[in-house]
Image (cartoon, rainbow over all chains, first blue to last red; front, top):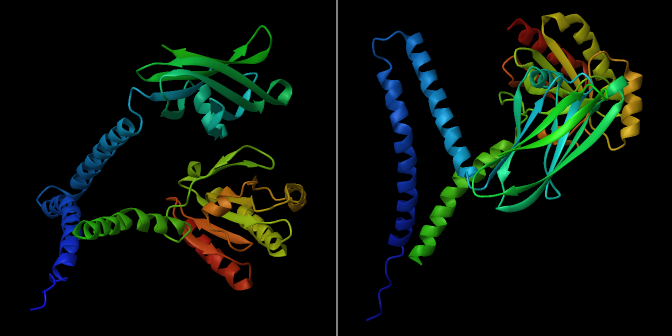
Length: 190
Length: 170
């Protein structure tokens, strides 16, 4: 009697079942939101429901953002670089290029509105990434218009030690009133 | 064997989750889709970031220095800009050129009052899938692409004007 091969149709069914299970998982994830919509037909005014829903979505979005940041940039490897500007009389910022250990990690072009926000006291997170513990070098190039509306490019360098725990660095542009020139600094937030 | 099939099914699912959205992302410059954001330097004047113009009707015209249609297109857009600037119309010409000197000469010769933007890396042209010049993208006040016109003819010009009227009235 010839050997009866195991029915081939059953095996693909296993694969299909896997896919179906995954699809059901996706549908199960979507279902609660559909239920929310179904419940929203209840007595509360539509506008109130919409506002409530918007608020929920914003909260969810914020939580997801925090979760994403924690996953992408764990505290023990995180390095963040911020930009701040004090005054800005002698320098009109156009762009900042950032290199860490010789590798370009950010090249940001500023619009007048963004520069205005910085001059008003805003602080921009220019870069966030991961670095292993040890010694590193940060180089920042600032381009823009300097005194007398001349093209102006300056660099600033900082050697820093990354240990366990997040590292925060700040690029600061200030006015040097004594020299009538802009001053560029990199600060290490201990 | 069973494991392989399961792996194949899993890969298929991953393809649905990751590859299809990626493919969908390729056709970003489609009517109804959010206009991809960008920031560029202008030939003269300040840098421009598209997302700062939510609430205004924005026209982006891609041009090249050796393109006669682009010249006509930019002149037509200058008329639109003069007429409808106060109603919230913003026009930006984005260069698509290999020769930056030629692009600069062209920009200087055009004498338009709206910003002409430099894109030496052609990053914005790639973002908007520019495959013909001139190419014009009309963006509504919500930042969504409403029309993409890939030529400059009397018919396309009329269609552009009609669409602009509708967008500015919203």
